[in-house]
Image (cartoon, rainbow, N blue to C red):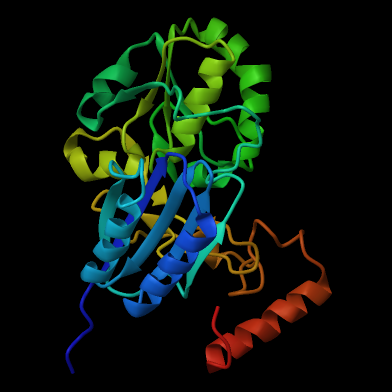
Length: 303
């Protein structure tokens, strides 16, 4: 039996004003259906953010359609491959923000921090006067990060502005930092975070161009300062330095990543509980999760 061809995975975003969102949403949904694409595309007045997988020709057709929109010509994507679909369905959604910060007036099309190409990143963050900031969520940082990066400990991107206001300024003074270097998975959170920081009067604000995914793609592992795996928001869970699925798995009760060792703990019951959520849900919740897991294993429902 011939095996299915690999699926192309494209992660992309761009901040640029979009018009006629309902029309564009309908076109993308139809295009995805024709080409058997899976994934999530978020559309807002401020731009587009998405990750899709499917046959290469179909993914490229969707990207071509997006680039036909005014201001989207420079849309770039980070590519990787997977042997099996890493999403279950295609969702094209309209949102207030393509990455939710919740601060009025932040406009990455107006100003953002200075881009640092992946090839220059190691040298840049090695400077002791540079403070390295991981803008991702706490559970993502736990899967992997750059050596020496500050973890703000946020549970969502909405918490970053408050952390910056309350903690970042005194931290820079304490560390003797003269400049900031921010990074995230694909670059979108950093664009918005650096725009916000500049708006708040911070200076010497920089960010990793293309995010972690581009760094892993372009910097040889022997030269890399990356430690661990990179969490991604799809069924692959996390990618290694070769942009291949790593060893982490998801708890389908709470949606948080787990190492193989954590899956061996008594708290882990597939689809029901893990060390992160064993105290979070009630017995009734866990009974419901167990029934759902049983249905999944029998093939009665899809996750």
